Image (cartoon, rainbow, N blue to C red; front, side, top):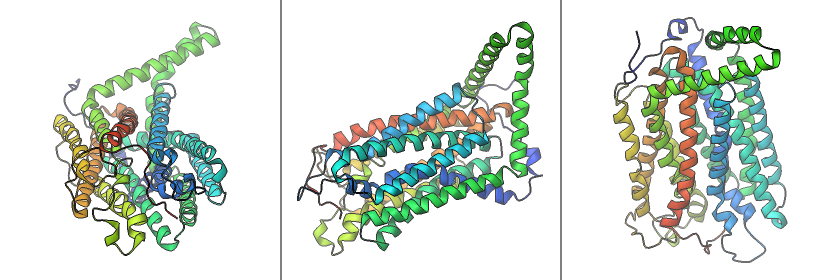
Length: 465
């Protein structure tokens, strides 16, 4: 019997088999760890803002103001990453089969390791005389790691979407834990060393170790029954193309039949995406709006928020100059994001049968753009400064991040459950497309947010030494 589009279609393709998986807790923790490492490079390029500003600052001029390279670093990183992500996900989804492939995973993990190793080597190189070239190389590394991370996300989301919801919840929770891990490493490195270059070197080394451990974890994961179940399910889905392939071989020459088979397969993929979209369109737009509202102000705008009280009231410059943004913005955001994703394992409101209500909740998050405008942002263009207490700013960040983590996780969990079992992997790839599109659009909106609330002209702000 055909299930109406507006009704939830619970996917049970892996549930009868999941009981035979040994060490299910180990498999769950493996997904958490894979999620932790997959977005580690992007989180680093954002959180390591003080290091890159130190590299891009013109120290030859005493009391030099912030350069355009320093001021635009967060925006350019987010924009390069977002555009690369959306182009890559379109290619992977519409041209290549959007399913897991171990060679894609290993190649991507190795590519991320190489990018981090290059970044580590730059820590010990003086780039004062070629800051623009260093900036360009950094953006190239951002693009490369974004391609690798997007391929990994596509593969892992497709894998987790075919399994019970706890696995996809573990994977998305691992992503937020990755951000939390990055900022904790950054804070520790700042406390251990007073020089940003040494702090960055410590962080890069830890990041490389984490990615290498990701390779090891995935190697053992693909040996488990969990991976074998998924491989069997994908093989069953792909077998539907085999009759078309043999029919095309018997009706034409090899070249023509090969082209015909590819066309039929591509058409089938597009049809599967369209059907999955009809079932999950409210979750699709919910994820899109969630990341649009988040990336429009984090990190480009929030990383520039300053303490509510004058710096002269603080005897420890380490807090005001180096730790305030790390703790009050990044640490609180990733704590709230992690908490929001974890509570989705126990609390799921609204229910699966009310996707429009969930969509409306995601839409209301845009109000945070206006609320954060009342905080202490430098060079304001006449916007009123009302929240003159750091506690209010911290409460806003926590509320903002918890809502982001919860809305993202609950939409990711619901989407594969709303489609027939054969389309669960396709729904995961579709949600990944919504995520990357929201990230890209949000990063573009961040330029407008910074321009509205602040002046983009360079200002005289003490540089970190």
